Length: 465
Ligand SMILES: Nc1ncnc2c1ncn2[C@@H]1O[C@H](COP(=O)(O)OP(=O)(O)OP(=O)(O)O)[C@@H](O)[C@H]1O
Ligand SMILES: [Mg+2]
Image (cartoon, rainbow, N blue to C red):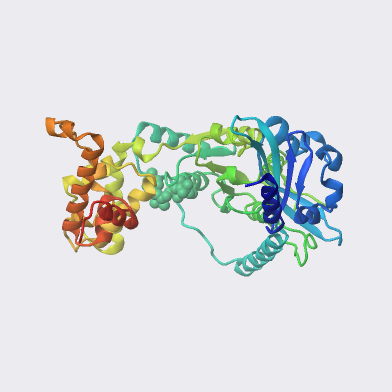
């Protein structure tokens, strides 16, 4: 295709998307500026095209310019929230992403900025906040208690796990912030609640908020509250900090909190004052923060997801919960505990598991950790007949993957070659799973693969039902 055609194509695409798009070349000269960007930034196209970014955006200090960072430092900026007043005097909120563009040789050839107008989303979230506030008002005084956990509910004897519990017990005796690191389902919430209910704050509220997937203004309103007039129709409403006063606030997935808000949170933690969105005065608060992360802190900091200053403020007490695959000695005890729990709940009497199942349970890797083990046992108990030992083929974990076998490399196998050998094993396992389970869905479950994958492979090996 001629380069002129490419240009026409690019122009056509960028004019017909809902986002504002700006492209600068490696010198910083704006070579593309679509109508939507011009609308959002209140800048005429002819005042931007062909000019240097530093001239056009002279009101943005160089060190704050995401385009300069992309061009000079190869730095990508994702989802940065910005607010403009448009030509009609209306407030417009955008989410901007700026990406450096490299050629095949790794040389920077330009940068692209994409701006999404989220004014409507913001208005929607404000309405949602208001509704949420009204619902809270209505429920005031009524019990909205979440399930309470204490240290008695925490099962495990692995050395590192016990160390984490010991640290948590000590944390319950003081007021410092706590940072809990653990993969999903390892018991972070259990530990956070146990700390609260064993502390002096136990008679005050324990509230939890997940920081993921909420736009900055919504999360800010939820945490710090809103003041009348801070946005159309806003009412005076207290946020979680005020509601949890005297108690504990669990901030789950703190690294998903927008970067700007992380610094506001840090200020609150240092000063013990909050300011409602749109308010002019501060309110004193006394809230203990327990935050959680499910990736190592160093990784989150390196990826720019967790502010170093906030991290140091939070990790006064740092608790690491090991994943279940690193504490296999706990699988037996936890299995017994959940068997008892679900026998009781479902009025069943599953007393023993076959050695094959036990073996499978010990060798499984549990990406969902203790929560996943609990669900497996829950399904075992619910599917077993009263008083019976459990029937294996209804088990929901891939038994073959859980029981690694050593394969003897006979002369025949060696002659087949790797690919053909693996294919023959795959074919044999698929045939066996289909014969023994009688349906594609069950066979797929047994093999631990998706139904579509199984169908694809059946076709490949010409296996018929
Ligand atoms: N040590 C444990 N003893 C008993 N039950 C546990 C233990 N750890 C976890 N559980 C069970 O696993 C479930 C999940 O735990 P929890 O909600 O605390 O995980 P989490 O680390 O907060 O996960 P996520 O990151 O997905 O929010 C709990 O409801 C509880 O039933
Ligand atoms: Mg949790």
